[in-house]
Length: 446
Image (tube, rainbow, N blue to C red; front, top):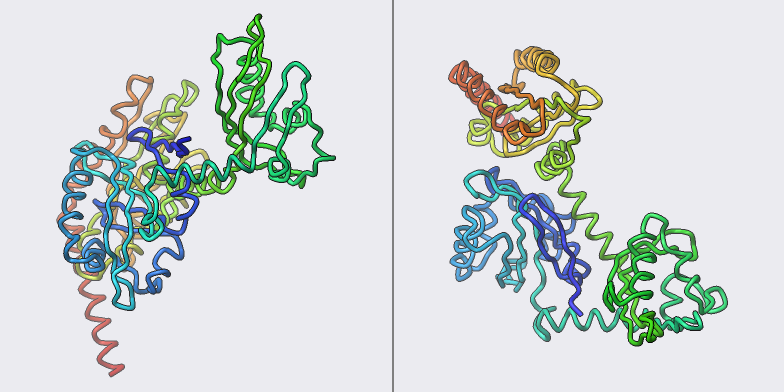
C-alpha cells in the first residue's frame, strides 16, 4: 500500500510520504529565495548542535554548512528548481551538513516549490531534512510498506454483510480507547462514531459500494472518528468487497483502519505555517492565492492595495538583515493597525505587501489607501520610520480578477518612481547616522 500525503499549493498538488512527515516533523524548513529569508521549526538545528543565535541568516551562510563536494548538487537544484522549473516542483537529494562539533552529518533533503513568479522563479519553498541513517537499511518504498503493515495490524476489520456482524481486531478497538465490551461487533459501532461532517463521504459512500458493484469493489477515505474520551481522531479507512451475492450486494467486506492522527496534525501544522509569515505575522502569499481562489460573486467589487517597502536593500546592505527584518515588521504593523476589520494584509514577497478589500469599490478603496498613506508618511517624518509606495486596482466582475494584482503593481511602480531617489537618500542618511551612532557607542564602551 502506498501511503502519502497530498498537499495543495498555488503550483498544484504535491506528494509527501506519510512516514516522512510523521518521523521528521522537527526537520521542517521554509525558504523565500527572492527575499533570501529562511525559517525553520524551533528545534530544527538543535540536532546539529547549533543554537537559534547561530542559525544561518542567508543563503551564503547556509552554503558554508554543506560539504564542498555537495555544492555542485546544490547548484543544480538552484538552476533546475529554484530559478527555473526545468525539473518540476519537487526534489530529493542526499547531502552532508556540518554540525557544531565539526562532523558532517548525512541527510536527505526533500523540497517542494509552493509558488513561482511570472518568470517561473520560485518565491516560496518548503520541505524537510531527514537523517539519511534512517534510510540506510531500507529504501523509501519499503519504508512505506513497513509503515502500512504496522498500521494495518492495528486496524483489521471484517464485515459479514448478511449477518451484519463485524470482526474488529483488539488493536482496532483499542486504537480509539474502547474495550471489546464497549464496542459491539456490529457495523453501527463504527458508523455511529464517524464525525457528522464526514458521514456522507465515508459511511454513505461505502454503503453504495456494498449495495452495488456499479460503484466498484474497493474504497478509501479519510475521516474523523470519536475517541472514547470524547475527542476526534483522524482515520484512514481502506476496504474491499471480497464476495457478492447474485443480486450484486456484498456478502463480505474486509479492510483496515489506520491511525493517521499524528500525520494529519503534522499536515495541519505545515499548512498553518504556510498561512502566516513568521517574520511579520502578516498572511503569506500562499494565503493570498488561496483567498483569491475563494472569491465569490458576493465579494465584488474587490479592490487591492499594493505596497512596496522603499529602500529595504539599502537597510540590509548598510545595517544588516536584522534591521531589515525590523523594517518589514514595522510596515506590517502599521498596515494591520490601520486597515478595516474585513480587510486582510498579506506579505507576498521580500518587500511587497498587499491589502485585499472585498465589497469595496475604487472610490472607497482610494479613501482607505489615502488614509494609510497619510499615516505612514506622518510616521516617516520620525527618524528611522519606513517609507512605502502604494498602488491600487479594482475588479468589478470575475473576469477582471486575473489582472487585479498586476494592475495594482503597475500603479504602485508609477507612484514609486516619483520620489524614489529622494526617499532612498533619506533612508541612506538614516542608516549612516545609525552606523555613526553605533560606532560612537562602541568607542565609548572600549
